[in-house]
Amino acid sequence: MNWPAHFDGKRFYNPDGQQVRGWRDVLRWKRTSTPEPSPEWVDDVQPSTPPPRVADSVLRVTLVNHSTVLLQQAGCNLLTDPIWSQRASPVPWTGPRRHRSPGVALENLPEIDALLLSHNHYDHLDRWTLARLASRGVQTCVAPAGVAPAVRAQGIVTVHELDWGESVKLAGVTIHSVPAVHFSGRGLFDRNRTLWCGYAIESREGFVYYAADTAFGSHFAAIRERFGAPRLALLPIGAYAPRWIMQPVHMNPEEAARAHAILGAGTSVAIHHGTFQLGDEAIDTPARGIAELGLGERFLVLPNGQSADIP
Image (cartoon, rainbow, N blue to C red; front, side, top):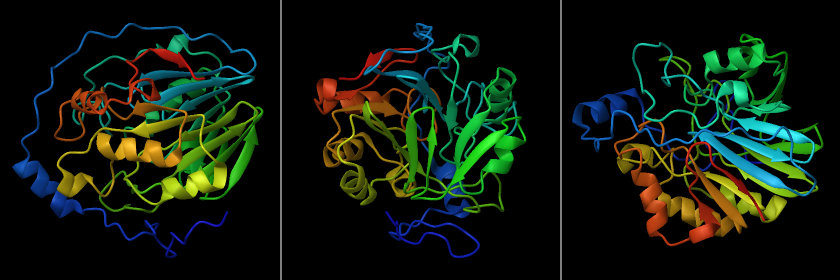
Protein backbone atom coordinates (compact mmCIF):
# COMPACT_ATOMS: atom_id res chain seq x y z
CA MET A 1 0.00 0.00 0.00
CA ASN A 2 1.25 3.48 -0.87
CA TRP A 3 0.78 5.77 2.11
CA PRO A 4 0.42 9.55 1.64
CA ALA A 5 3.52 11.68 1.12
CA HIS A 6 5.20 12.53 4.42
CA PHE A 7 8.67 13.87 3.53
CA ASP A 8 9.46 17.27 2.02
CA GLY A 9 13.07 16.53 1.12
CA LYS A 10 14.45 17.68 4.47
CA ARG A 11 11.96 16.78 7.18
CA PHE A 12 9.17 14.29 7.76
CA TYR A 13 5.64 15.47 8.54
CA ASN A 14 2.16 14.19 9.33
CA PRO A 15 0.23 14.13 6.03
CA ASP A 16 -3.13 14.88 7.67
CA GLY A 17 -1.86 18.33 8.62
CA GLN A 18 -1.81 18.03 12.40
CA GLN A 19 0.70 20.55 13.69
CA VAL A 20 2.99 19.52 16.52
CA ARG A 21 3.61 22.30 19.02
CA GLY A 22 7.00 23.99 19.00
CA TRP A 23 9.57 24.76 21.68
CA ARG A 24 7.89 28.03 22.66
CA ASP A 25 4.70 26.11 23.40
CA VAL A 26 6.64 23.55 25.41
CA LEU A 27 8.18 26.34 27.50
CA ARG A 28 4.74 27.92 28.01
CA TRP A 29 3.37 24.55 29.12
CA LYS A 30 6.19 24.05 31.61
CA ARG A 31 5.75 27.56 33.02
CA THR A 32 2.00 27.15 33.49
CA SER A 33 1.83 23.41 34.18
CA THR A 34 -0.07 22.10 37.20
CA PRO A 35 0.56 18.35 36.99
CA GLU A 36 -1.37 15.89 39.09
CA PRO A 37 0.88 14.55 41.85
CA SER A 38 2.30 11.07 41.43
CA PRO A 39 3.96 9.02 44.16
CA GLU A 40 7.74 9.27 44.21
CA TRP A 41 7.90 5.48 43.91
CA VAL A 42 5.24 2.80 43.52
CA ASP A 43 6.41 -0.51 44.94
CA ASP A 44 3.73 -2.76 43.46
CA VAL A 45 5.58 -4.52 40.63
CA GLN A 46 5.69 -8.31 40.78
CA PRO A 47 8.60 -9.27 38.52
CA SER A 48 8.19 -12.16 36.13
CA THR A 49 10.43 -14.37 34.00
CA PRO A 50 8.93 -15.06 30.58
CA PRO A 51 9.40 -18.50 29.01
CA PRO A 52 12.18 -18.93 26.43
CA ARG A 53 9.61 -19.56 23.67
CA VAL A 54 5.89 -20.24 23.33
CA ALA A 55 4.14 -23.10 21.58
CA ASP A 56 2.45 -23.03 18.19
CA SER A 57 -0.68 -20.82 17.95
CA VAL A 58 0.09 -19.09 21.28
CA LEU A 59 0.36 -15.31 21.22
CA ARG A 60 1.71 -14.00 24.51
CA VAL A 61 2.19 -10.36 25.42
CA THR A 62 4.21 -9.25 28.46
CA LEU A 63 4.25 -5.60 29.50
CA VAL A 64 7.74 -4.81 30.79
CA ASN A 65 7.07 -1.12 31.37
CA HIS A 66 5.96 2.01 29.48
CA SER A 67 5.96 0.99 25.78
CA THR A 68 8.37 -1.91 26.25
CA VAL A 69 6.45 -5.07 25.37
CA LEU A 70 7.66 -8.61 24.82
CA LEU A 71 5.67 -10.26 22.03
CA GLN A 72 6.04 -14.03 21.81
CA GLN A 73 4.61 -16.28 19.16
CA ALA A 74 5.84 -19.55 17.70
CA GLY A 75 9.49 -19.19 16.75
CA CYS A 76 9.66 -15.44 17.29
CA ASN A 77 10.36 -13.14 20.24
CA LEU A 78 10.02 -9.40 19.56
CA LEU A 79 10.73 -6.55 21.96
CA THR A 80 9.28 -3.08 21.39
CA ASP A 81 10.90 0.27 22.32
CA PRO A 82 13.01 -1.09 25.19
CA ILE A 83 13.84 1.12 28.17
CA TRP A 84 15.34 -0.08 31.45
CA SER A 85 17.04 3.23 32.37
CA GLN A 86 16.09 5.22 35.46
CA ARG A 87 15.35 8.31 33.37
CA ALA A 88 13.97 8.92 29.88
CA SER A 89 16.61 11.54 29.22
CA PRO A 90 19.90 12.24 27.46
CA VAL A 91 21.63 12.54 30.85
CA PRO A 92 21.33 10.45 34.03
CA TRP A 93 20.84 13.33 36.49
CA THR A 94 17.74 15.08 35.13
CA GLY A 95 14.68 14.44 32.99
CA PRO A 96 11.62 12.25 33.50
CA ARG A 97 12.43 9.51 36.00
CA ARG A 98 10.70 6.22 36.51
CA HIS A 99 8.09 5.74 39.23
CA ARG A 100 7.94 1.94 38.87
CA SER A 101 10.54 -0.72 38.21
CA PRO A 102 10.54 -2.80 35.04
CA GLY A 103 8.45 -5.93 35.36
CA VAL A 104 11.10 -8.14 33.75
CA ALA A 105 14.78 -7.83 34.63
CA LEU A 106 17.14 -7.51 31.67
CA GLU A 107 18.91 -10.71 32.70
CA ASN A 108 15.57 -12.57 32.68
CA LEU A 109 14.66 -11.71 29.11
CA PRO A 110 14.48 -14.66 26.74
CA GLU A 111 16.44 -14.63 23.50
CA ILE A 112 15.22 -11.69 21.42
CA ASP A 113 14.98 -12.19 17.66
CA ALA A 114 14.45 -8.52 16.86
CA LEU A 115 13.83 -5.14 18.44
CA LEU A 116 11.11 -2.86 17.08
CA LEU A 117 11.91 0.83 17.51
CA SER A 118 9.17 3.30 16.62
CA HIS A 119 11.00 6.65 16.80
CA ASN A 120 13.93 8.37 18.45
CA HIS A 121 12.42 10.00 21.54
CA TYR A 122 14.29 9.21 24.74
CA ASP A 123 11.51 7.06 26.22
CA HIS A 124 11.53 4.87 23.09
CA LEU A 125 15.16 4.87 21.95
CA ASP A 126 17.26 4.50 25.09
CA ARG A 127 20.92 4.19 24.24
CA TRP A 128 21.97 2.63 27.57
CA THR A 129 19.36 -0.09 27.17
CA LEU A 130 20.30 -0.76 23.54
CA ALA A 131 23.95 -1.16 24.52
CA ARG A 132 23.02 -3.59 27.30
CA LEU A 133 20.84 -5.62 24.93
CA ALA A 134 23.63 -5.70 22.35
CA SER A 135 26.01 -7.01 25.01
CA ARG A 136 23.53 -9.82 25.67
CA GLY A 137 23.52 -10.86 22.03
CA VAL A 138 20.63 -8.91 20.53
CA GLN A 139 21.82 -8.10 17.01
CA THR A 140 18.73 -7.30 14.92
CA CYS A 141 16.52 -4.24 14.96
CA VAL A 142 13.74 -2.74 12.82
CA ALA A 143 13.63 1.05 12.89
CA PRO A 144 12.12 3.99 10.99
CA ALA A 145 13.96 5.89 8.27
CA GLY A 146 16.96 7.80 9.61
CA VAL A 147 17.20 6.02 12.97
CA ALA A 148 19.71 3.29 12.07
CA PRO A 149 22.91 5.24 12.90
CA ALA A 150 21.82 5.84 16.51
CA VAL A 151 21.08 2.12 16.89
CA ARG A 152 24.28 0.84 15.28
CA ALA A 153 26.30 3.16 17.53
CA GLN A 154 25.14 1.07 20.50
CA GLY A 155 26.39 -2.20 19.01
CA ILE A 156 23.28 -3.51 17.23
CA VAL A 157 24.74 -4.93 14.01
CA THR A 158 21.75 -5.46 11.72
CA VAL A 159 19.25 -2.60 11.44
CA HIS A 160 16.41 -2.78 8.93
CA GLU A 161 15.45 0.83 8.30
CA LEU A 162 11.89 1.13 6.95
CA ASP A 163 9.75 3.88 5.48
CA TRP A 164 5.97 3.66 5.79
CA GLY A 165 4.76 0.86 3.56
CA GLU A 166 8.05 -1.05 3.55
CA SER A 167 8.43 -4.44 5.20
CA VAL A 168 10.95 -7.07 6.24
CA LYS A 169 10.63 -10.80 6.97
CA LEU A 170 12.25 -12.00 10.19
CA ALA A 171 11.94 -15.20 12.23
CA GLY A 172 8.73 -16.35 10.61
CA VAL A 173 6.91 -13.00 10.70
CA THR A 174 6.56 -10.09 8.28
CA ILE A 175 6.99 -6.67 9.87
CA HIS A 176 5.40 -3.73 8.07
CA SER A 177 6.09 -0.09 8.90
CA VAL A 178 2.78 1.81 9.09
CA PRO A 179 1.89 5.46 9.73
CA ALA A 180 1.60 7.13 13.11
CA VAL A 181 0.71 10.73 13.92
CA HIS A 182 3.65 11.97 15.93
CA PHE A 183 7.08 13.62 15.55
CA SER A 184 10.76 12.97 16.20
CA GLY A 185 13.79 14.68 17.67
CA ARG A 186 16.35 14.35 20.45
CA GLY A 187 17.62 17.94 20.58
CA LEU A 188 16.90 21.53 19.63
CA PHE A 189 17.78 21.29 15.95
CA ASP A 190 16.81 17.83 14.69
CA ARG A 191 13.01 18.06 14.82
CA ASN A 192 11.48 15.59 12.31
CA ARG A 193 14.79 14.72 10.64
CA THR A 194 13.97 11.04 11.22
CA LEU A 195 10.70 9.17 10.77
CA TRP A 196 8.23 7.79 13.32
CA CYS A 197 5.98 4.78 12.75
CA GLY A 198 3.89 1.93 14.07
CA TYR A 199 4.24 -1.71 13.05
CA ALA A 200 1.93 -4.34 11.61
CA ILE A 201 3.27 -7.79 12.41
CA GLU A 202 1.86 -10.57 10.24
CA SER A 203 2.26 -14.28 10.96
CA ARG A 204 0.26 -17.47 10.69
CA GLU A 205 -0.94 -16.80 14.26
CA GLY A 206 -2.62 -13.55 13.19
CA PHE A 207 -1.96 -9.84 12.82
CA VAL A 208 -0.52 -7.78 15.70
CA TYR A 209 -0.55 -3.98 15.57
CA TYR A 210 1.94 -1.97 17.60
CA ALA A 211 0.74 1.65 17.45
CA ALA A 212 3.69 3.09 19.44
CA ASP A 213 3.27 6.84 20.04
CA THR A 214 0.44 8.35 18.02
CA ALA A 215 -2.38 10.81 18.11
CA PHE A 216 -5.84 9.77 16.99
CA GLY A 217 -6.23 9.85 13.22
CA SER A 218 -7.47 8.34 9.99
CA HIS A 219 -4.53 5.92 9.87
CA PHE A 220 -6.39 3.45 12.11
CA ALA A 221 -9.10 2.93 9.50
CA ALA A 222 -6.48 2.68 6.75
CA ILE A 223 -4.54 0.03 8.69
CA ARG A 224 -7.75 -1.96 9.26
CA GLU A 225 -8.51 -1.75 5.54
CA ARG A 226 -5.02 -2.89 4.56
CA PHE A 227 -4.42 -5.68 7.10
CA GLY A 228 -7.84 -6.58 8.50
CA ALA A 229 -8.75 -6.64 12.18
CA PRO A 230 -5.77 -7.29 14.46
CA ARG A 231 -5.80 -10.21 16.85
CA LEU A 232 -3.92 -7.88 19.21
CA ALA A 233 -3.47 -4.09 19.22
CA LEU A 234 -0.99 -2.33 21.50
CA LEU A 235 -2.42 1.17 21.95
CA PRO A 236 -0.98 4.16 23.86
CA ILE A 237 -3.16 5.78 26.54
CA GLY A 238 -0.85 8.13 28.47
CA ALA A 239 0.93 11.51 28.32
CA TYR A 240 -2.23 13.20 27.05
CA ALA A 241 -2.62 16.25 29.32
CA PRO A 242 -2.95 19.14 28.78
CA ARG A 243 -4.83 18.54 25.55
CA TRP A 244 -3.85 21.85 23.95
CA ILE A 245 -0.27 20.61 23.59
CA MET A 246 -0.62 16.81 23.69
CA GLN A 247 -3.62 16.22 21.42
CA PRO A 248 -1.57 16.42 18.17
CA VAL A 249 0.82 13.67 19.33
CA HIS A 250 -0.80 11.45 22.01
CA MET A 251 -4.19 9.81 22.50
CA ASN A 252 -6.20 9.95 25.71
CA PRO A 253 -8.08 6.84 26.95
CA GLU A 254 -11.29 7.78 25.13
CA GLU A 255 -9.43 8.14 21.83
CA ALA A 256 -7.61 4.86 22.40
CA ALA A 257 -10.99 3.17 22.89
CA ARG A 258 -12.18 4.71 19.61
CA ALA A 259 -9.07 3.41 17.87
CA HIS A 260 -9.72 -0.06 19.33
CA ALA A 261 -13.23 -0.01 17.88
CA ILE A 262 -12.15 1.27 14.45
CA LEU A 263 -9.44 -1.38 14.22
CA GLY A 264 -11.88 -4.09 15.28
CA ALA A 265 -9.15 -5.52 17.50
CA GLY A 266 -9.90 -8.81 19.20
CA THR A 267 -7.93 -7.61 22.22
CA SER A 268 -6.12 -4.34 22.91
CA VAL A 269 -3.43 -3.82 25.53
CA ALA A 270 -2.60 -0.40 26.95
CA ILE A 271 0.93 0.94 26.58
CA HIS A 272 2.73 4.26 27.24
CA HIS A 273 1.56 4.73 30.81
CA GLY A 274 2.28 3.82 34.40
CA THR A 275 6.06 4.24 34.60
CA PHE A 276 7.14 7.76 33.54
CA GLN A 277 5.04 10.89 34.08
CA LEU A 278 5.40 12.64 30.72
CA GLY A 279 2.16 14.66 30.78
CA ASP A 280 0.26 16.55 33.44
CA GLU A 281 -1.88 13.56 34.38
CA ALA A 282 -0.60 11.31 37.18
CA ILE A 283 0.95 8.00 36.18
CA ASP A 284 -2.12 5.91 37.07
CA THR A 285 -4.80 8.29 35.74
CA PRO A 286 -4.75 6.79 32.19
CA ALA A 287 -5.33 3.26 33.54
CA ARG A 288 -8.30 4.47 35.58
CA GLY A 289 -9.62 6.22 32.48
CA ILE A 290 -9.64 3.00 30.47
CA ALA A 291 -11.25 1.09 33.35
CA GLU A 292 -14.06 3.65 33.55
CA LEU A 293 -14.95 3.01 29.89
CA GLY A 294 -16.11 -0.52 30.76
CA LEU A 295 -14.31 -2.37 27.97
CA GLY A 296 -13.32 -5.22 30.28
CA GLU A 297 -11.23 -8.00 28.75
CA ARG A 298 -11.39 -6.35 25.33
CA PHE A 299 -8.93 -3.65 26.47
CA LEU A 300 -6.41 -4.92 29.01
CA VAL A 301 -4.32 -2.78 31.33
CA LEU A 302 -1.46 -5.03 32.39
CA PRO A 303 0.74 -4.20 35.38
CA ASN A 304 4.49 -4.16 34.73
CA GLY A 305 5.63 -7.75 34.44
CA GLN A 306 2.21 -9.28 33.78
CA SER A 307 1.56 -11.47 30.74
CA ALA A 308 -1.59 -12.34 28.84
CA ASP A 309 -2.21 -15.09 26.30
CA ILE A 310 -4.30 -13.54 23.56
CA PRO A 311 -7.27 -15.56 22.23
